[in-house]
Amino acid sequence: MDEEGLAEISARYIRFADTEARGRSPLYEELARAVAGNREALGFLSTLPDLKQQPNLLLAAVRHLFGTPAGWTEFRQALQTNPDAIRSLMLERSTQTNEPGRCATLLPVLARLPQPLALIEVGTSAGLCLMPDLYGYDYGRKVIRAPAMALEPPVFRCLASETTPLPTTLPQVVWRAGLDLRPIDASDDSQVAWLETLVWPEQTARLANLRAALKIAATVKPRVVKGDLRGSDLVQLCNEAPNDATLVIFHTAVLDYVSDLGDREAFAEQAMRLSPYWVSNEFPRVFPSIATRAGTSWPPGRFLLSANGSPVAWTDPHGASLEWIADEAWAIGGGLPSLARDAIRSQFHLCSFATACVLNSRQAPFGLATGRLNEGTARWAREDRIRSREPQLSASRLRCKPACRSSEPGEFSETHKLEIDHD
Ligand SMILES: C[S@@+](CC[C@H](N)C(=O)[O-])C[C@H]1O[C@@H](n2cnc3c(N)ncnc32)[C@H](O)[C@@H]1O
Image (cartoon, rainbow, N blue to C red; front, side):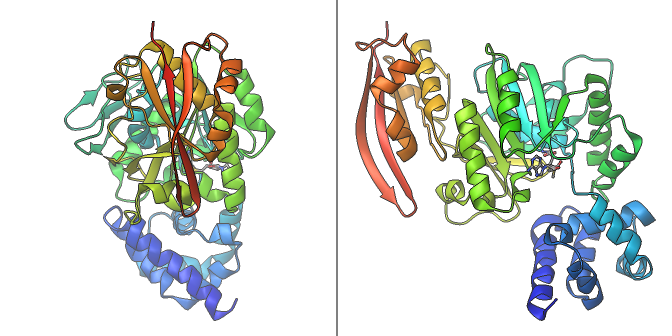
């Protein structure tokens, strides 16, 4: 590999040290910086495919084989003397870190959707994030207890910003299923050992919570199907979801593994077509068109939580904190008359990628609902379309008026006012 290639790997490790490990794992920060400055280690990494050069994967592979090193000297020695064993483990495994603590950042969104829920998680690993209703949460100013069960549930601590609409109860999940290229079996000791190694050193509370969640998964056995989030596997799962629950397709820390932006956007479009709610919790670079709507400066090392393409919160990648950025009006169902709410849900069915549907119940005190639609939706969101999909909305009850248009670089939006006369 040429100098430029080595410099790229080095920059990746520096970025990991600066934005991911700093403040979370002093050992990983030290090791990542040392790798970034060591030609031998960079040379070793350059023999691996791009996806396998990940800092998390190298650091976990060395710890899995040789235990947690005291520091760089021990780490380098392991790498120098056992490159083949480390390489083959890195090729065999992947970073399937399953972090159930991410449920703490998903919960404020999930709890606001019309209940009960049918959850589909793509890139689910062992399915631990598919059980947000079975854990406890401590948001400091509010604690939500896990349901009573024989097993000791994990309690996830999450520092939530003042404006975060914290849930008062757990969501009601009546159906759940996950999809993963390589599902992990929570009752298989060797797979569980790898998941445990993926938890960073020093993070003992995280490890204890992971173990508690794994025990629940070994009992509940959330259904995890082997398949690719791109294509027909997801369609198949959606078809199996019950009709009398709100279907939600969600993912956390997954779409970064889909290297092509076009593929990621195609997935997003499909998720929006298949389900009324699509919730994404990913690094902002994953969906730049959503992230630019959250502002121009993205907080380093944060995921962007979005719902139906609309930015909702900046989140800690392991679920330790949450900064709510959505308009306070992001209040689906909050006091809207049910007919208006149904119509809004029908809009979601019609939405395409990057749709922002901002509802404000205060703007709709008399049963009027306003939705902001993007270009794709605008094409579909004509009265006749909505009526043909929602025959119970009679002509006299529903008006869909173009309100205003705006064009920003790379994005078009058209605001429609959807008015429904309330009985
Ligand atoms: C970092 S893990 C995240 C697991 C879980 N979502 C969480 O937040 O704890 C990423 C997972 O995505 C899966 N994955 C990556 N690309 C995928 C694809 N194209 N289709 C399905 N799963 C995929 C991987 O196998 C892995 O289990």
